[in-house]
Amino acid sequence: MTHSSRPNLPEAGWKFDNSYLRLPESFYVRMNPVPVRMPTLVVFNAPLAQSLGLNPEVLQGDDGAAVFAGNRLPEGAEPLAQAYAGHQFGHFTILGDGRAILLGEQMTPEGERIDIQFKGSGRTPFSRNGDGRAALGPMLREYIISEALYALGIPTTRSLAVVTTGEQVRRETPLQGAILTRTAASHIRVGTFEYAAARGKPDEIRALADYTIQRHFPDLGSSDNPYLALLDAVMARQASLVSRWLLVGFIHGVMNTDNMALCGETIDYGPCAFMDAYDPSTVFSSIDHNGRYAYGRQAQIAQWNLARFAETLLPLIHENMQEAIAMATEAVTGFADSFRQYWLAGMRTKLGLLNQEADDGALVDDLLDCMQRHGADYTNTFRDLASGSAPEASVFQTPDFMQWYERWQARLERQPEEREVSRRLMKASNPAVIPRNHLVEEALDAAVERADYSVMQKLLGFLSQPFNDPPDVEGYHLPAPPSAQPYRTYCGT
Ligand code: AMP
Ligand code: MG
Image (cartoon, rainbow, N blue to C red; front, side, top):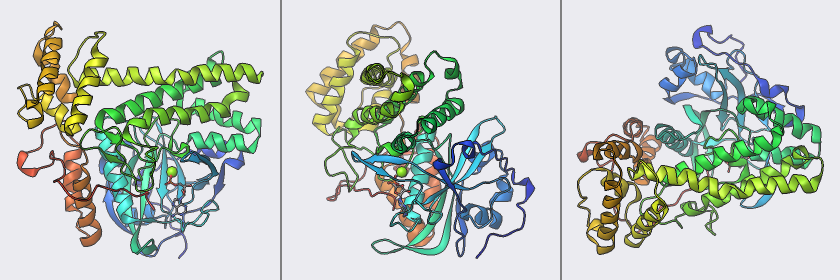
């Protein structure tokens, strides 16, 4: 099959301006997605399409299937595979888009520049031994969880469409092939800088750094030391992002440096999942044997990744290497404090605290310790606290919890505002609905095994309003029923 020469319907609304192509050529390989046999559009995100300036009516039918499969290129697309490297579980590797193609950058009606990328669109020069393809289940999983994070107000890449390809992908068993269209503020990763540094060409690192500043931090261009300022700005976004993950119980699962985007969006939904019972050592990923990416280690790992980023910037930060190292080290060392501040500010809102007291950190830490001792559900504990009346759940009847509860009540009494103000803040900060693992699996099972997308659509509906209480009978707020099997996630292969 070849790319159709028929021009794309103009009313689809594509408006590409592909600035990535203006980087040195070593950063990408121009190539088209590999066409597929029989594309079917199975999920389409109409509100996202609209916000991108695209016309859902044009893209929802067969035309959309052909476009989102890569069989027909939208007007203005200049497809490429990005080059990058990365530390995977601590080990440096040259990677690149092995199964992704960047179509280009869509200019939205709001004047934003958004990457449109296919995932699962065929082999590229970076594919190594991979087939360049993706299976339906993992692409739907990325769709569900990325859209859930978006609704929770957490910066993230988003999911525009999923098509099935009508082709099989071979994993342990044959699976249905699929392509996800994802959108992102950009796909510049820590690993993109590591790739540039590994090539040892200072001009290329500078070009990438200048491009990143222009695209994501334009105000820094006029700083005294724009590259040190870039490091600080990227660190602040990561400190904020990872604190938000922790605040909702999210575990990314594979925080390799190639999966850390400099724009500060959550990227690469492979083995990610939400924690049920609070336990910082929680790991779901089947390949994370040592708990490197456990829930409670995410801030530390982010800092480790940022140290790798800082290393790539050293030649730009100062001409004297010793000076550069001293400046970068000071910056990276500050990450732990910066993270803790973002996190504590978030925890204050979760507990309805409207001002600051010196003991707030201890109050939060003691609550978490208590939750861990009793295996309390992370999400529901906070939601119960937000309910306003003394919670009835059995965990709240334990002496240590009751003692903590009195302390918290006394703390709330000391602030001048009405209780109602705290309650409203808590309701808006503590989700009632998260993508519970068993609910996600149910939705995927219906879609993949029976081509029934209604379960997923219904789940997406509740996930899109996570701070509203779902009807009790629906069970969307309940943790998984006790099961003998611990939940396991797999990288999206
Ligand atoms: P990830 O674990 O998804 O971050 O992927 C790590 C690297 O492996 C990236 O360079 C991917 O492009 C590549 N990769 C993952 N799956 C495949 C596949 N099926 N075919 C080719 N490359 C892949
Ligand atoms: Mg990745």
